[in-house]
Length: 173
Image (cartoon, rainbow, N blue to C red):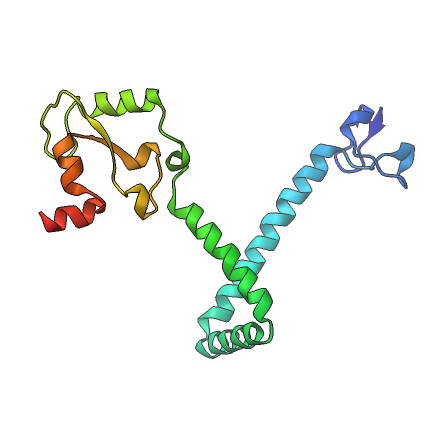
């Protein structure tokens, strides 16, 4: 058992992080006290940085200087800028796609879609003997075979829509 130098509680060895220089090879503060300290310090630092940034951006001259400095850096570091832009583009793609969009359509999902649309065409609302899996954004135009991109459609609507997106098809109707 070790006594924490911060809270003064006597606790077992496993409640302390290892530290070569520490007494018994352990940190003098318990894990709870260290966690509390880091949480408080993080919030304080975050608030200080937010306030400093807000003050800097409130001044139009400082904003202009910041933009110029950023432009100059990008000009002097074209390879790094290109890599940053590529990473940002990848992140933006992920932002636009909710998590369920990446889930491929399964037979279970197809049955759920049919039930949701009450076994009717998503476009003309007519019942049909056979409903087809219609892609709102066609596969040929970069769409994917996911739950959010597939709806039930009768054969007539599916062929009429063809390789258009839903928006293009509705504007043309």
